[in-house]
Length: 129
Image 1 (cartoon, rainbow, N blue to C red):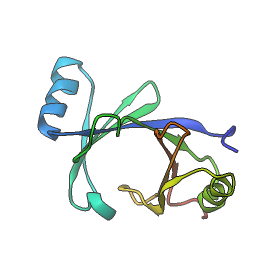
Image 2: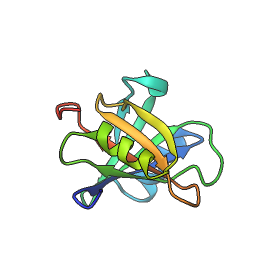
Image 3: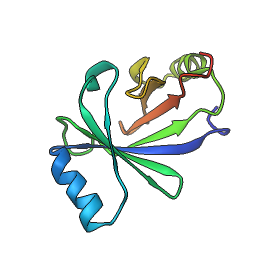
């Protein structure tokens, strides 16, 4: 089902976005972009993004407990996020977050593996649902 995807991002939930920015930028030397959320719970909130070897590291400041992140995000090369989520649900997979707007205007959905780890799907806004 996901064999034609690639890992596009790893998402971290952090306690302090400024502290995180200082660490990854000043300590590790990564180039970070400060973004502003456009949809859902991240509306208007700053978040950070860095490209590392073609995979985005994304940081959201939000409450969470250890184990809530990082979240592996599978990029969908083609449209059809709704069908994939329906297919996962039909196989008994727990859908954590149904298809919803991603902070950049695309589409996202979260599901859990058998041990409760969150995995995510991402589809760009210009691809048909």
